[in-house]
Each structure stands twice: as C-alpha cells, then as structure tokens.
Image (cartoon, rainbow, N blue to C red; front, side):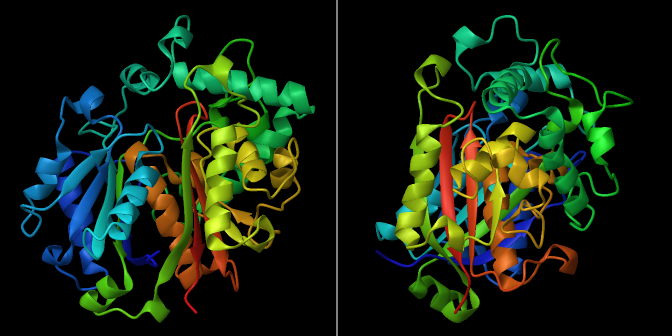
Length: 401
C-alpha cells in the first residue's frame, strides 16, 4: 500500500461568507491550498468535492463542473461526494483510494457549504428541512427541526442509560468555546461561555424540544465555509517540491455505515463508528493510548461524549466525564477539538470532515496557536459522522519523522 501524505491544507474563516458563491468558494479553496506550497492547479491529478446541501439550498448539481472551470482543472477526473455530514471525510478517502489505485500521484479533497444568504442571515426552517433529508422519512413526522429533535432523543437516551446529567454534557461546549477563542478561523471566536451559562436556561440558552434536554449551547453552528487538502504519494510530494520528512502522513483510515432506520442500530454503541475507528487504528498500527489529540464530530454535545468512547479514550458511559474532568482539554490525556469543534469553530457541513483532518495535521506540525498546541504529539485521530450516527469516517495521522 502506498503511503499517503498531506501536502497542504487551507480553509476559510468559518461563519459568514456573505455574497460569495459556490463557484467562488471552490476557486478560493483551490487557489488557497495551492498557494500554501506554491503549487499550480495543473499539478493536481484528480479531485473530490464534498457538499451536502447544494441541491436543497442552491438547486445546483454537478459542482465538479464548477471546479473544472478553474484554470488548470479542466479535463480532469473530478467527482462530487455526498455522505451527509461525513461528506468531507468521504472526499478524503475517495482521494486516497484514487492514489492507491494508481490514478495519479496527487489528489484534491475540497469541501464547501453555503448555508447563509448574502447578508449572512440563516433561514433556520429551510436549513432544518434540508438537513432533515439525511434522516429516515419514517422518523421525521412531528419534528419541526429534524436533526436537533433526533439528537435530543439520543441525548436523553444517553443520560438515562448512563446516569449522566446535563451539566456534564455542557462541559463539552464550555471546553470548545474556550478553545475557539484562540482559533482565528472559528465562528464563535469572541464569545465566551461559562459552565453556568451552558447548563442554565436563561438568555439565549433554551430547550429546543419540549420535554427533551437539548439546549442552545449543546448545538453546533449554521456555517458558511470551505476547506481543502492536497493529498500526495511520495512521488507526488517530489513533483510538488516537498519532502516526506516535512509532511503529515495519513497512516490509517476506515469508513462504515449503519442502517438509517434507528430501530436497526444502537445509537449508544454505533457499530459502524467503532468499526471505522478500529480499521484506522489497525492500519496505522496504533492503539487509543497513542492518540494525543483528536478532532471529533460534536454536532451536539452528546456526540462529543460518544466520540470519546468510540475513539477508545473513555469507557462506554464515561465520555461525558472525560470532558467534565478536563481530560479532553489541552494538557489533558487527549486533547479533543482544540479547534473549537463544530459547536464553536462551526459546521459548514461539506467542509467539516476536511477541516478536522486539516486542523489535526496542523497540530502535528506545530502550526496551531500556542494556547491550543499539544506539545510533542505524534499521532492524531479524526472521527466524522453523517446522519444520526449512521455514516462514519475515521483517520489516524502521523507526525513527520
């Protein structure tokens, strides 16, 4: 199997991109990631584009044609990838598989999502409907905002099954808002949240579904953003003028999908998520104890807790305590979502999985702000999900030697 490296990573500010179009976002992502290493678009052999809401929010398909319109990308194999919120992670895996198959030595993985209008405003009802399409139709009736409702039910199930309280889960959001204050790309930079604010119903913090525990601060953001990676084999790095010793390796990866129907899966121990993670660990030849930092899919705080368990950092039912006890903080046993995560960094759906891998690679290169840097980290992991804990993509990254 060929070794695959991250030659470059680039992302936008997450939050509001105002009047920027999807075509402009793709072009900016491409030019930005090439600019990181002084490369030209013509040096990229193939591309995978991740976007989840292009049809539903923009009535636009064939994003590959928009990317092909950027000089240097014409007449190349370009595909669009949709795997709900795991689209970004899947785009990376598709790029890796092209390289493994011998279809070139370099591959672009780019993710975009335009969720707000030209004035930066979000139509919550329309976005809720669009994201609701990634659930089982049988489970939508009676839910005004489908995904918050579904995850509110998962949150309640987790709390009741394991005896966890709202305050413990609120610690996920508090940790991430604190991290976001140091991330210049984070949507919620400049907004601090205390544990009392996150755990108390007051001001902007309210229950989203009557009778269920999910609150405003438990939720990720509605976000515009783009992110892009250039993946390369050793031959690809040589073509780009880069040294293997300076680049992070994607040492392991895995993907798996559970049934969409909730009755057919265990949301508290999702088989696909555990399998994808174990595949990534086995390929990289590491154990959970060797992971020093990770970026995980905290679309809601309960997923921050579950992610710690899926990565093997905490025993089942102890994921919330892992955060509440400070083990997920910088300086803890494994720093999680030093970027601020989906809750505070932002969640531009198609770009999310790519941004996870990109930020994790910056951690291993020592390129994140000093307050967020995990010293001496050798291995990082990412865990990206799509749907109600349905599709899963996991990776393990290794620092340059």
